[in-house]
Amino acid sequence: MKIRTAFLASAAASIIGSAALAAPVTYTIDSNHTYPSFEADHFGGLSTWRGKLNSTSGKITYDAQAQSGTVDVKVDMASIDFGNDKLNDHAKSPEIFDVAKYPTATYTGKLAGFKGGKPTEVDGTLELHGVTKPVKLKIDSFLCKQNPMNKKDTCGANASATINREDFGVTYGKSFGFHQEVKLEIQVEAVKGE
Image (tube, rainbow, N blue to C red; front, side):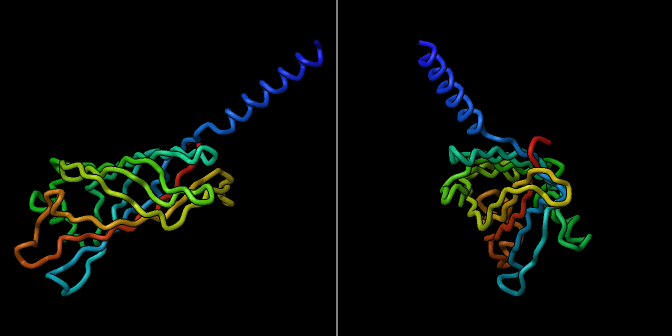
């Protein structure tokens, strides 16, 4: 009887321990190492303009064993940066992003398409300029490891997508022949438990 009780207790502890290991881990986005960047057309192929958004925040949950996770990111639209002050001001104006009325863009989604325990995409929605639309991100690389400098567990990824800005009501330049497609390139790092 004692052996059977000890065996059952050991089995229960093993199951509980496995469940604890499989719990999702929450990571806080490191705004100093996270920059959504973009490429947009200028005058129908005359050139390609590039910029980034300098202020992001949010959380990522990740459960490698269950092959699941979530993404919840907020972007400060007033932090848009083309490397050109005049263009930055114009982008913030009511004519383009109207950041006084729509100060934040948000992206929420679920990690998906797991291969080798790592996600290859995010199925999510982007809210931009007061409009919410589905946007699927392709994850080009994904890695979790201890940061060798600060010794903190960190996950990082590079992701990409192409959106049509007209879908979000941002149509400035269309009458001049500007293509409405915008390529997104996102680098993100998030730190466990911060």
